[in-house]
Amino acid sequence: MSSILSIAASGMAAAMQRLDVSAENVANEESDGPLPSAGAAAQAQYPPAYVAQQVTQVATAGGGTSAVVANVQPSSVTTYDPSAPYADSNGDVAAPNVDPANEAVQQLMASTSYAMNAKVMSVYSQMMQTLLDIQV
Image (tube, helix red, strand yellow):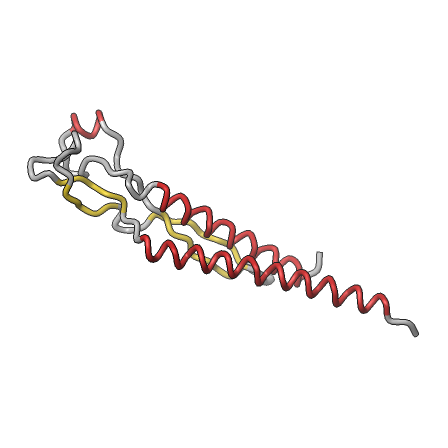
């Protein structure tokens, strides 16, 4: 595979990873749990809050990119939900640190990045076909 195609393919793979991570964050943004400071009984009885992730793209040797997935820090924020069975005495629970506006931006960036890398592949293919069609 040519370097142009491998670079575009790596960009498409990174965009898919970015979209997958963002979609998982959005799907789990309501998955709260007991505060990290909750007692051992609450920690054992109820699952912890979902830990949101983020994607950072880094350049790879020889061209291209790769997606590095890491947990968002801090992983949770304190929210008020006195109806939750694992709420502390103040009614607080741990909610995933998910920013819906940021996730919308991440999804748009992933979609655009994927489309642009697909276009690079298409143009490269057309260019090679034109080159092969040249008659001497």
